[in-house]
Length: 125
Image (cartoon, rainbow, N blue to C red):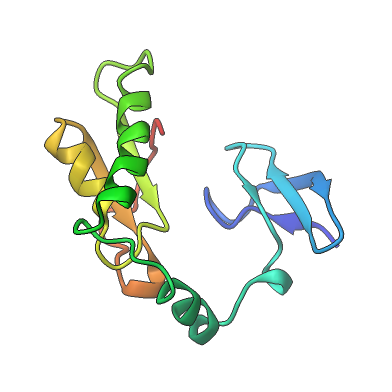
C-alpha cells in the first residue's frame, strides 16, 4: 500500500524509513517528515486520555526547562527569521509561547484541541 504524507499536501508519496516490533515509519519524499500510517494512530479519545497523563503546562518548571532546549536550538539555525510550526502543541501550546517570547514567528498546530488556524504555507522548522 502506498503511503501518502499527512503533513505537507497529502499527495506526496512516502517510502519506508524504518520499522520496529510495533509499527512502520515512513518518510515523505517532498518534505522529509517521518510519520506512522494511520492504522497505528490512537483514537481521539485514547489520545486525549494519554495527553491527560502529562503536565505539559507553563506551570511545570521541568517541562518549561525541557522546551527551553528547543528554543536554544532554534537560535542556532542559519535562518534569520524562521517560520516555525509547533506540530502537536497540545492544549496550552507552551513552546509556541516561549518561541514567540524569544521573538520568533511560531504557529501552534494540534487538531485534537482545535488549534489549526494559520497552518498554511511553508515552514522553516
